[in-house]
Amino acid sequence: MGTVDDYLDQLAPANRAVVEHVYDVVRAALPDLEQGTSYGMPALLHRGKALISVMRTKKHIGVYPYSGRVPAVVAESVPDLDYDKGTIRFQPDAPLADDTIRAIVAARVAEIETPSLRGTR
Image (tube, helix red, strand yellow):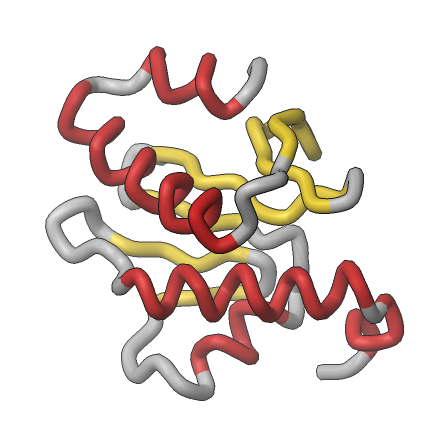
């Protein structure tokens, strides 16, 4: 896969709108992000480190914060968040709230800026 924009161009319009919205909220929170790839997925990078990837799968839209810790941290304040280690899932017709997206970003940025957080949880 290429950059985030290349990936978005490949999506069906309905899926693109939902995935693009997540990326837009992330970009609004941190305007100086770069596009790149990590683990073969299109990603937004913060200070050269993978911050987040959002991708459509067969069964859901997956948010990948490149962290096993971040989904659990965010789930503490978001009831019924569908998550597993390293992944947050949602359906296109039930998108994540913008505040949840910002919480994911804040938790991941904290890890990037304070690497010792990665080992907690």
